[in-house]
Length: 468
Image (cartoon, rainbow, N blue to C red; front, side, top):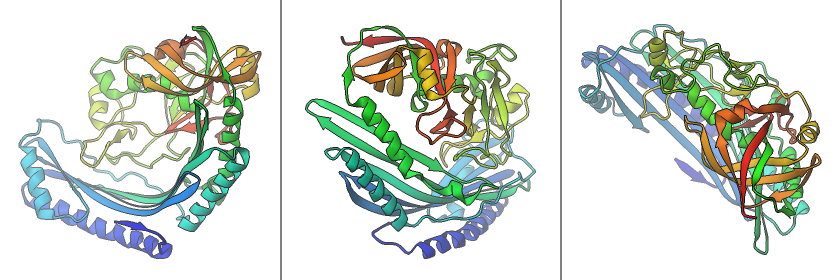
């Protein structure tokens, strides 16, 4: 349901609380019906959420939304074959069971991937952010940005969400957890003649058990500071020649090299022996400065258990550059003969679980931002990229969407019409420094870029292609 304009926040939260036991009861009846209809085993996965969102465009508040959603996925096994059926909104239990059983006839023969133990969940103290507060934060942030640059157009989006997930199966598992989060960004579009500069900054917050209430607020004033820094650096354009340069990757650009590393650690690729690291356990696979780990309790995207009902765990995948293990769902953990660590996730309700990560965290930085710039001396500082990257091969060729030229350890201005080309694994082996974020939105000197918690990475050399 979509609602525009003012909303009754108390009634929305009460509605969400009332919806949870109803979905639990529905899922129990659905499970019973599936077994009665001939399924040897069955699993019900359900999700419900309520989101409040405010949108700003062209310096103005343009939209206020409340979105509620719920869905249910039924997996059944009959005669060793699996079938999956999904319903969003109202659930017709008889029809859903009928579809799942019919689809099981087309499924492949395989083991039943179900646990008979309920995982440990967590309890987070509920909190709310009203639409009025979201609007006030957005307006205040935009007012500050317009003071910095009156002729720029400002936009943004701020939201609060509460969501609940539940999982139960015919082997006795019955678990659920509720989560709360705030999220948002502000951006500036600055046009000067034929020059266009677009910068933004934002934050995602989802408190974890034991964290104080002070961790629940969006720090809009720090977004403004980060945008001011980007505007200051990007005001003047600098022409550079194509060559090989040292490169510092800021957190938002880190996916350029990390996506390939994650693909190489994926249990599917390791089991199929298509990963370049399938025989590298215990060997050096990247710079000794780098460690990659999973920390479910650290950041905004953590969960207590995965979509197969396995408790998520802190796991070291790469330690001081040496590969320790990959990440797997139950199916590929069995094939690789390793213990599941809570890494089985569904890309959507209509998908089977597959290997996925929770909060990929890199090594803490060892030097400040200014010290890392000084160490590089001359080179590129890359904020955002766009193009082709993240493949298992590691090869990339990307446009520097937002980047800066550094000379003598000082940022001289923005570079335009520059591309980077190279290999992610080569770059990860060439990391020679880790620096703290300049934005002040970091965890121990690192910033969240999606589900990656990363410092600044100084890569010894990358190939830059420039128009000039």
